Image 1 (cartoon, rainbow, N blue to C red):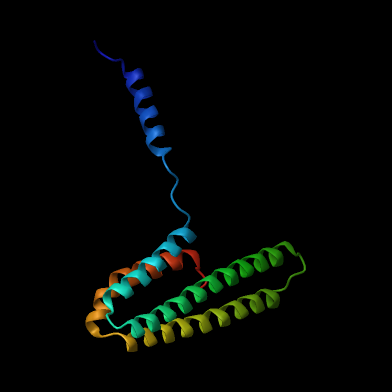
Image 2 (cartoon, rainbow, N blue to C red):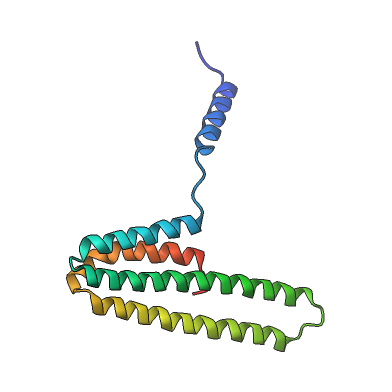
Length: 150
């Protein structure tokens, strides 16, 4: 018995909606938190010296806080820009001051992130660095999705 093209289309649509209605994707913040947990776990597995591993994890903690701060700053900056945009009397100088302040804080965060990177590099061997590189990149990518103000 042949199924009409309309029925096939309806069945395909139903199958697609059921397939797409599965478990929602985790938020970017949840993904970033899990990526940081994975990074710490890998550090403990790769670095045999417990003291050095804990020092690296302390730097990962600093990086996580830095990224969280970047997210807060970005949201505040977005709110400030919305407020300025809504204010008919806001001047170009007001906007420039908002951008200059945000960019100065962003530059400071970038310098701190580089210092953290350098500190981690000083604590690990080249082999350990290579073994950690995949999970490090995943964690930073996930975290930066949350804190675009880096």
